[in-house]
Length: 221
Length: 221
Length: 192
Image (cartoon, rainbow over all chains, first blue to last red; front, side):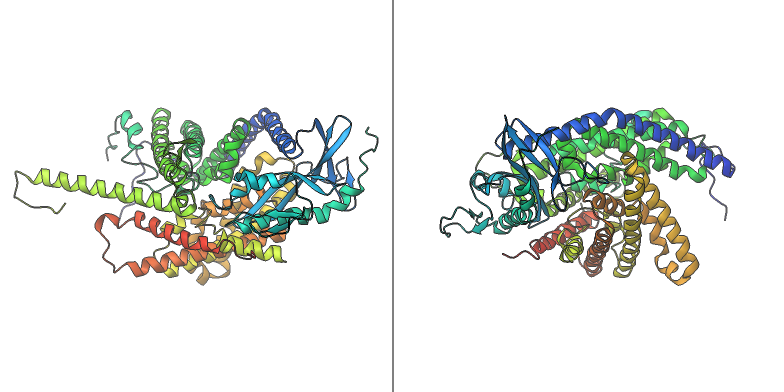
C-alpha cells in the first residue's frame, strides 16, 4: 500500500529545525501583538467614551436629569471619592451622587438579582432622606420576551419606581392597601417583578447605611 | 500523477454560495448561526465580522504559506485568526456598542468557528492569494445569505418586525418561540430539510432526464 | 453557598450550555449518535472545562489585567496547550482511559464550549470557586444534552424516517424540541 502523494502544488517540506519553528511562531506572535496593540490604542478612547456616555444617560434617566454626578466607591464601611487601593476602576462597585446646581439630587445605585431566566442588572435612583425611589432602569436582562421583559417594556410598571418608598413590598394587581412602599407586580410576570424588588431591597439593605452616613456637604477638592 | 485541473476563478467565488455553502452544506459555524440570528441586524453584524476575519486570515495565510513550517501551521493559523478576531471585536465595540453588546461573546467565538480554520487548512494554505480571497468572499457571501435568511424568518415570525420595522401589522401576535433558543434550532432544521428535499428532487429529475432515450427506468421522485 | 449552587444548576439545566446558549454544537451534532460515545465525550469535556476554569482564573488574575486585549489569543493558546498536555498525560498514566477518551480530546480544542466557558466566566467576573462550579455545571449540562440526544437518535434508527429527512435537519429539530423542554427549568429556585 503506497502512501498518498502530497498535493502537487505544495512543495514537499523537510521537517524544519526547532529554531525555525520558534522563529516562525515568535515572529508571528510579535506581528500579532503589534497589530492588536495598535488597534487597541486607536479604539480604546472611543470605547471608554461610549461607556461613560451610556452610564451618564442611565444616571440621567433615574435621577431626572442632574447636571453632573460624583462617582463614589463602595467600601466595607463608607463611600469614598478615591478609588480604594488595589481596586480596579472598571470593576469596583460605585454609586453615583447627582447634583443639580449646588443641591444634591439623590444617589444612583446599581443592583443585581437573579431573575426568572438569568441575572437582571438595573440602576435605580434613591433619595436617602425620604427613602423614596426616584426612577429605575433595567440595564441587562434575559427575561422571557412578551412576559418577563415587561419589567422594562411596561411603562406603567417602570413609572411606579419614581414614587415608591423603600423597602419595596410587592403586591399583586388589585390587592394591597395603598401603602407608599407597595409596588404592583406585573400580572403573569410576578417572578421577574419580584426579582427586581429583591435586587433593590437587598442592595439598599447593604449600601443604604453608607448612603445615609455620607456627608454630601463635604468640601470638594 | 498530473495535478488536478484547477476550476476557473469564478467557481471559487460561487461555490461558497450554494454548492459548498459553509452552513447548509458543510454544517460549519452553527454556533453563531443559531445564537445571533434572532434579529436581522445581529445576523448582518455577525456576517460582517466573519467576512472581515475570513478575508484577513485567508489573505495572510495564503501570503505566508511557503514560509510556515508544517509542524506549526495550525498554531500559526489560529494565532492569525485570533488576531483578526480581537481586532474585529475592538472595532465593533468602538463603532456600534449596542450591537456589540447583543452579539456578546459570539464575536470572540469566531476564533473557533470551524469555517475560518477550515478554509485556511483546506484552501488558503494551498492556493494563491487571489484564489484564496475569492474563496473567502464566496464563503462569506454564503454564510451571510444563510444568516440573513434565518434572521429574517426568526425576526418576522418571532417579533413581527424586520430590521426593527413592523411588517406584520399591530394585530400580529408574535410567535415568541422563534426568537428564543428552540426557534433557532427549529428554523435551521426546517431550512436544512427543505434544502435536502430540493436537492433530492432535482437529483431525481436529472436521473429521469438522463435515462430518457436509454432503457426506460422509472425513478421514484 | 446558595449562589454557588445556583451557578452550577443554572449552567447545567436552566441555561444549558448547548440547548440555551448554543455552545458545543459540533460535538452535539457530530458525536451524539451513540449513547456510549456521548457519555465519553461529555466526561472528556467536563475534565477539560474544569482545568480551563483554573487556567482562566490564573490568566485573568495575574496576566490579563495588564493587557486585556490579549485575552482571546491567550485563552485559545492556553486551551490548545491544555488539551495537548491532558492528552499526553492520559496516554502515559492510563492507556485504558486514553483508548476510551483520547480520540475526543483534539476535537475539544476547537469546540466553542470550552472557549465559551472561558469568555462567559470572564465577562461575569467569576472568581476561582465560582468559575469551577460554573465549569462543572456547564460540563454536566453538555453531557446531559449529548446523552439525551444520543438516546433519542439511537431509538430513531429503526424508525421509518423519510429519505430527505435523514440528515442533520432532523437532529436540529429534535434539538429544538429538547431546548423547548429545557425551557421548563426557568424559574427553578424562584418562589412564585
